[in-house]
Length: 190
Image (cartoon, rainbow, N blue to C red):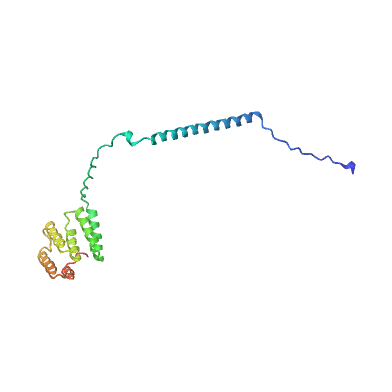
């Protein structure tokens, strides 16, 4: 067996040695990063150093406060512009609320319509009807008067005195049910 020896390969673990050139570039990178960090630290230190001096200022050093002056009044609200599309939409939505029995919402919508198109008579008529159904006789009469003022040739102009007298009679009777009875002959919601 001694003669059958096969030379075995011996492996040497070779340690890789970095050349001097790469070691120098690594040192330069480290120096560059240290310089950047030092610069950042200096900037942060200078910004924090300036703050305590400003924080230590006293109100007495600044002198007396300026005298009180009244703030300027808020600007007057702009007048609504003439907008027939919004007026028609407000009338449509107010009519929907009226059919549902939500008279307060209907009144708001009809008032919006009168602001957007003041020469349109229909919102005043519907506004009077909504006030009437709600039980607010004075505002209902005022709305009907405004309706007749805007629409001088209204087809139901002859019925207006009868309607006003029905409302006044219902008010004097003290019945809240009379509002619906007085509103029954007129159906402008549909």
